[in-house]
Image 1: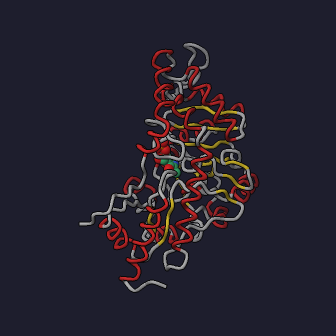
Image 2: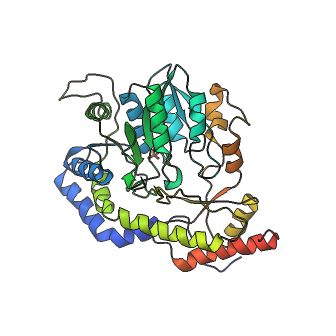
Image 3: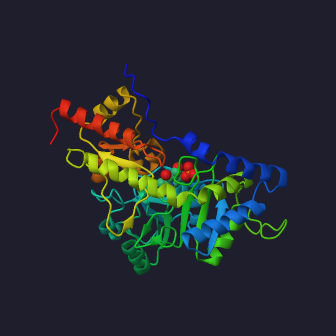
Length: 376
Ligand SMILES: Cc1ncc(COP(=O)(O)O)c(C=O)c1O
């Protein structure tokens, strides 16, 4: 058994200890001042987050999943429609499509970025296609220029799944600005996370904003006036208050993540593992730092034996999950996503991760590679 200290995959406790006074005061103000669901705390955070993204509207909801679901509904997606997305995402992207009664249609991913392969979109479009959901996976924006161009040509809506990409940008334009709407999650481990579930839809379209605002609160438009059946998916005051405090740190945290990624990059450069590829135009915010390794499972076991926690995002592409069986997808349908799923490994990544710990992770990877004589 190793005597090395544990290197966690994420460490929310150290993040909290840095801000504990401010956060606890903010929560205290909610408890004494009220505004537990929606209300002033939520409105304040919505304005702050809209301004952070550079959009006109932000509507706080109960989770990132709900953000996607309600945004799709607000854009008119329903039974009989098809929505195009990628198979290598968290299942929530696809659940949101299914929750609207629409059919999820997948396109494969690019081998280098692991993002939607835009060259495959057109052949997936049918008469039923209503929308495209690109996923800014791991914190790197998808190719929004190409996606929006194809969508415009075919009259399709675009919803950015930005649940892993708060503050990421393309040529200095932030995620959230590209699609008809964009959705963020505030799950605690996200780049901007609450102390429980939360999410938000952002848009520049007033009608979409109004519709999401209605849908999140029982279809209500004015007190006791329910204009359509809606949902109960409101952002809570305590989450909003905490998120307001944390939003002030987001740029700094993203910079720290990028710095940590650059150290991993340089230490692993001359090894057979593949480090993340980031396009020059992209500001990647490294929600996850994902390498590719041939002997991924053995490498993961070795790291675990040395007290280094890792993750796999995601081990089973969504089209092969049992939950999707009625859609008739099978192994071999999306070969790049399937191949990548067997090789990816997410290394410890959070803003407070210390340089010596990054070095220890890299050294353990290098020592594993040389023990299996795969070193360059
Ligand atoms: C890509 C992606 N989409 C959607 C979600 C759903 O967000 P939530 O867990 O807040 O519902 C997540 C995060 O969990 C995610 O990573």
